[in-house]
Amino acid sequence: MSDTIFGKIISGEIPSEFIYEDEHCVAINDINPQAPVHVLVIPRRGIPRLVDAEADDQALLGHLMLAAGKVAERLGVDDAFRLIVNNGAGAGQTVFHLHLHIL
Ligand code: 5GP
Image (tube, rainbow, N blue to C red):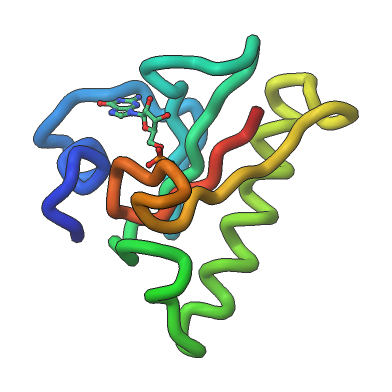
């Protein structure tokens, strides 16, 4: 678990509505949406940045992509969404617990 806002959301320390969850990840609505649908898919395991992921994380990374597709289907945007991962402060990453943006 990471000591970030997302780590606290996943642990329940900060209450948040999970619009999707499974054993490996949760999805929440972004607090500051940049599109009509803006959802964050967050692994329960707290990897700071994509470049910090290791070979052991391969299945988890694939799982996040599949979960994003399921969330998009549930939200009815499966024909029109983008996935974004900001890696590093230089790319605008502000929460250092890896996450996928669904927009
Ligand atoms: P990043 O810039 O790190 O790729 O994305 C972090 C995202 O988390 C931002 O879009 C920001 O609006 C969102 N965010 C930050 N704090 C919270 C929070 O407490 N709750 C939710 N739901 N989203 C948050």
